Length: 251
Length: 241
Image 1 (spheres, each protein chain N blue to C red):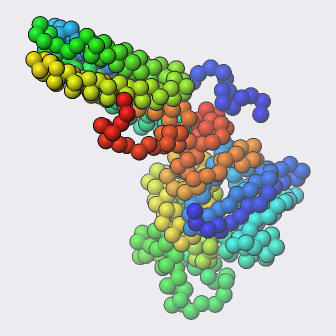
Image 2: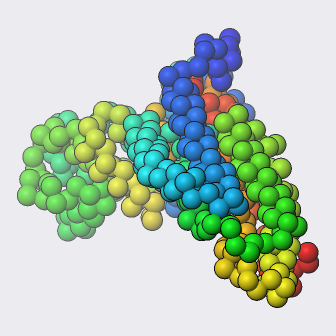
Image 3: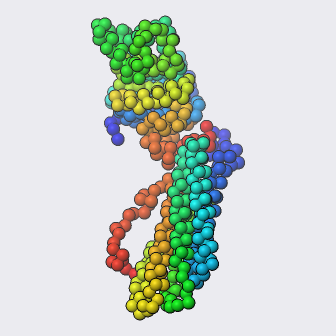
């Protein structure tokens, strides 16, 4: 197994007094895709939002335990810096609607400091290429982001996240609003991204988890039931709850 | 949790019934193959041409059952996209039906070797030994099918031990045939066929074990190498009786 990028150590996250996830520990390997699956309300999104300190942006929330990025506790670092290192893509494509395609792909670069126009152009091309969008938009970079299809918008959001040069990319159900063709493109992209990034993907779609991930975590009622190589989890899970879930017997 | 998530309603779902149906169909195919072995051996032992021809005629249906099973399992895989136990069962059934087809084919092969037994034949001792091999091998196939049909890992596991018995009987039969060839050269044609028949029995037992192996995999997810250590293989004539 490759080295560990993120270590989740006895993590419990609350909304008010209620824990949405409790006592979760797992090790997310570097440069691999880790999928988080489980029925609605099991805490998948809460878990992923704890990995870049987004959970705490909601009022009356609290986190206990640790999340280590390369051994450093992210809860002891500046959250803005954490989110620069750990990017995120959401369920619904959310490009900046007032901006052009170029404006979206270059937004993190402009926030992060001064770059020459040439350097910025090169970085935009690079991130759009990484997001497998370049060929489709290279002739209309100044068109509004909203002129793109849903799948293209989602890849633009991925390009925007990658432009910040993160180490980890979190994806919260990135395909749930997309059709099968757009979904297939994102899945291909996810597989390619793992060569350079650590990817954590939350998905409702078990076949998607099986297709794209190397490791899978199954959550149920806020608890981590099973975590292991994806092939094992779908072929011969060790826990009867996992067995029941992946065979569609509940959830 | 208010109810058992493994069985929320307590009643089998359509999905479970489909898996059950596939398993039952495979077991029926296995019984068809087993009957071919039973009658193929009987035709050979008794030199019954009519029964032998009857066994040969059953091969077409064996092929048909094999094709139908393959089609049904592939449809299940495509339409249901099963995981875990359901996936293992479907994958296991694909392999199992191949082994069932081979079992039936070996029964067919025994039927094809049938020659009239009006002339010189094997000794009563060898004939009795072959009958014992047939009894054991048929019982093994039956047990493999029962293990599959009733999801009985214990029945499946027990077969590996019995396969060793068959291997011993196989070697004993081979040596007996060689000894008889010297004493009874007039029966050479018959004895040569018996060499093949004993080999067929040994292969049938192996195929029964493969069915058991896939049953264990379907139920537990364990592969053979995880519960049976691989043994070094030796030359046949270096093996003890």
